[in-house]
Length: 324
Image (spheres, rainbow, N blue to C red):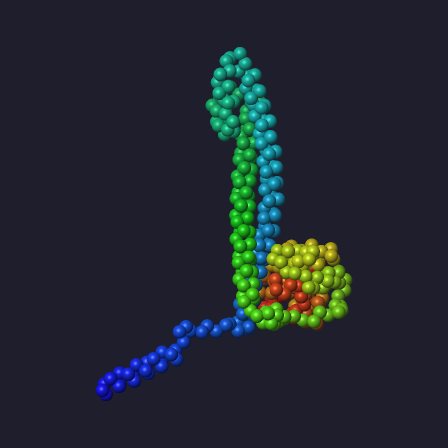
């Protein structure tokens, strides 16, 4: 009897203990600060890819211009080679006229310039004029080969750059999508709280002067516009697209790349900043804004925030330049 009682009490204790243990472990939702940090990191990684994309586009444009020039040069060289070839053919035909033309005919059936040159070199009894023509032909063949090689090399570089562009675009889209998914999981008030962080009251007057005044006025007029990777207006921007078009209003041409813009003017210390100066962030540089005075910048921030005013040191500061 005592043994059965102990067994029953043990079973009751075990059942009670099991009832107190939850069947599945509760997974705590990440707090706003954690989500904020993850979203900021994803947007920054997407922007890094976007700026690399911009750099690759600049490189691709230069390569394509060079390729067009090389192709045109190759076509001119091909025409020059054809003209010399015709002169050699005419001279050889005249020399062998009446002596049977079968050997010469075999020479002319080949369309390969190197083969044609090799066959001609086996023939003898050239006049000094014919020797000069042959030398000209050899020179033109070599020049054409050089141009063909250069064209093929540049074409390969174009193809590799286009592959880089596609890869960077895929990275941008993946990081952006992941950040948006994180934000979509938050409640509306939490999302609003995250997106409102870092916002600053827009100053009514910016004390800019000279050419910088036109650049600052244009940039400030875009506050509230959307942020789109790779965009340069008129109603959506990325960081370097905004500063590029803003300074274009002052007659200053800038590349569509934050890292390239860092080399577009004289370096300025943080203590000497003036409205219109370009300020750069992160290492390697992947973001640019425009200083507007009083420790503030205007910049195309990210897809959630758009174009806004922020504090100068709201991101890891690298340096500044003064365009123009």
